[in-house]
Image (cartoon, rainbow, N blue to C red; front, top):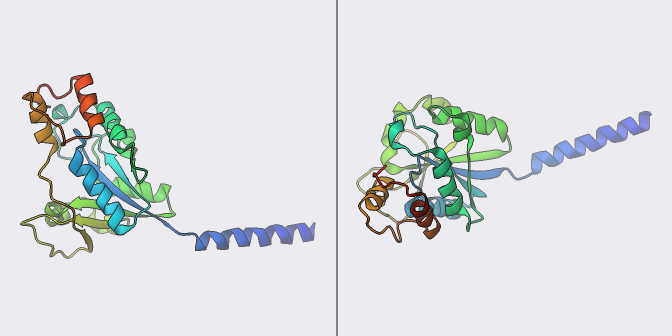
Length: 214
């Protein structure tokens, strides 16, 4: 019995030591309403993944952002379906549904706290536009949030990079595309070719989304 016990203990120690030497996962998070997801979103996610050598970047749709008008956001079922279509051909991109499952208004601190607790072997990189960096002091529990994730800033023209917060800056091709522009194009009957993945364009047409601009 003693011999077996010692062997079991030694095996457990070996396993625990192996865990310590395992490479931690490096994962990016790109949050947004994705109403709908468009080419610029995908370029940002892809470029950050490639430039930082991340294992994956997850596009994370919000159920309802803290300052969003719920009436102007289509059902999350459609936004999720379009995201699934958009990332289907890129093995380094995926979807994180934690905020859709939680529902309610989404604060980044609460989300990242849950993700780090659920995935203790993962280092997170939260991606934001350079225009958002100046608002970080107003973010909910920003100091605590900085202990949960690394911030990745996307450089934007006319926005500085000076900030008291640690930001990893990434250069991404500038694309003046927004979800609101896409919705306006659809509502006016104008082509969205090259603004969206073809699969997303087809989904919007099949489901007759955004005919009223929303």
